[in-house]
Length: 169
Image 1 (cartoon, rainbow, N blue to C red):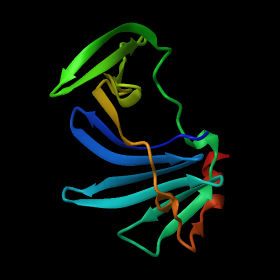
Image 2: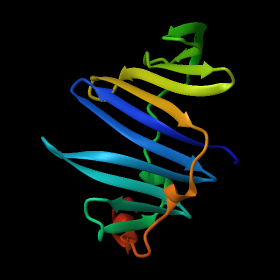
Image 3: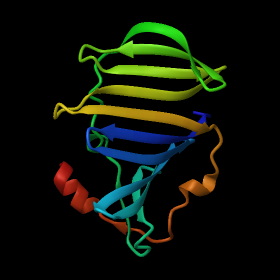
Image 4: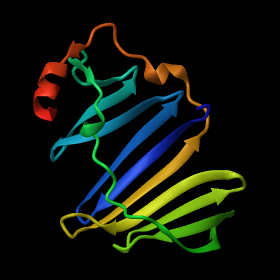
């Protein structure tokens, strides 16, 4: 495909909020994630998926770069059921007017798609997770151009495919 984008992903539950950035270009995907380690320590992780491998780069530990062969079974499928159109409307946010299309599924998960002109600029999903907690996820498209340097991987990565295969076989 010939499209590319950078987006901010914000996920909120009853007691937690996480923000990451995702990049997509020419079949490659990258994400920067802050992983909470303790009350005041986060570990910065960059995940890159390209050339059939998943690369995990820890910026706080520059010698520990891992890679493993990507496998579709590793990535959970979405819990969102089949979406049905609910309504469309305009929504004002400051000086910007969005055209919004709203969808819902049988579990009362609501997905709202926000458009500005011809561009999809945000997707907001709200619902209940598998533990009964409220869950909100917002994808904000920040740009439709991505620099190739985002997908640069280090010269050496430790191949942990045998370990991953053991757990997913």
